[in-house]
Image (cartoon, rainbow, N blue to C red):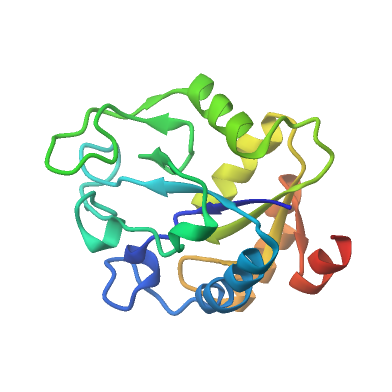
Length: 198
């Protein structure tokens, strides 16, 4: 099972986080998925964000390195290290000093080559027939952008329905997104269906 978690950071998951909303996927990941991964020796690849200015289109700083909000909510013993650190919605966008606390980060720039290598190191080539399972936050933004980048590279993408949520955490909004635009970039799969495929 190849799993990538997107932005599962405490600014999104903790009740005092800058971008916190009640999102059912958080409890599912912490209480169901992570114990399953531990039991079966599975590791989760992780994409996290450094959302400090300067960033085009926003001046709101969150997921700031050196703060609790930047920290991953995934336990260290179930994830690959290091995580991929992005600075825009698409994981291709990075910058100098990304993820480094106490230093001024550079402007965002695309680095598809390094992202390609990270994918190969963490989940293998797209020719591997097993799908890439996406979990994390948020389905209507960063998870969607990650699915697009994976699909462009030839990976087969599935969204674990219980393991993703929208920014607002609205179940109806999530179901609507699975009809469009997500259907262009991957397929939804339930936890039960995923277990049956293993």
